[in-house]
Length: 117
Image 1 (cartoon, rainbow, N blue to C red):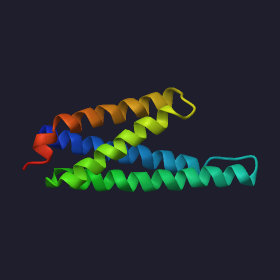
Image 2 (cartoon, rainbow, N blue to C red):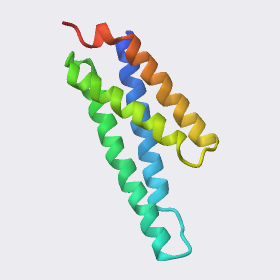
Image 3 (cartoon, rainbow, N blue to C red):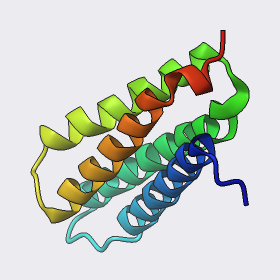
Image 4 (cartoon, one colour):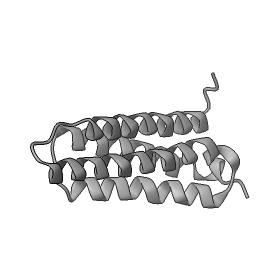
């Protein structure tokens, strides 16, 4: 197991991928009293899976040294933070925002290591 700070950022992105996948699965299998609400939950689950794939991509390629991957990761994490704040906000949202903020802070602090020029 690699213990460099860049590896920690990569593992943090993988953890976010797992969290988003769990959100997607729980949303898809959530019981709904009517069909319209069930479609809404399924759409949310599909979007969570799409974001999980984006996080997986970021985690796999963040250490490749490509600035485009670095900035894509920053944008995705920033959107996660902003969009979570402007929704109904609870404890799960707070933990998700803190996890994204910690990962974003780590990645921004490692900018020179992750995007060597």
